[in-house]
Image 1 (cartoon, rainbow, N blue to C red):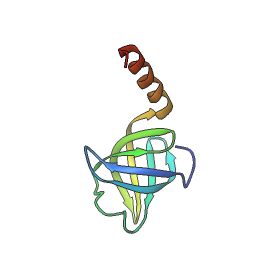
Image 2: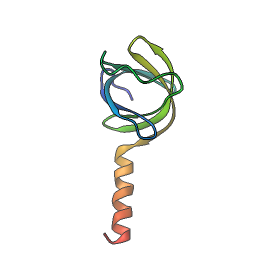
Image 3: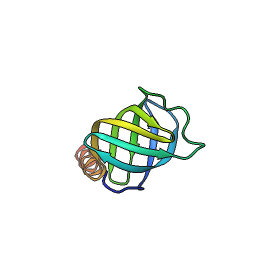
Length: 96
């Protein structure tokens, strides 16, 4: 995630509600995500999350918080365009 202030969707795993936020940058394997005042609750330290940007899905864990900014340790990431291509080929190969 390179763009600061890029909109993202944050979701608690495995099946939590979604919240909207904005990227506040990345350092190595950590993302900083700002949430609005009404969005900030419910993401305690240790919470597993999915962060979806326009280009990439990130999967990780909340490891810090600075007011309304969550710090997320990224464990895995998937490029959305590559994932769509795999899905398309999978569907075609199954004949559906």
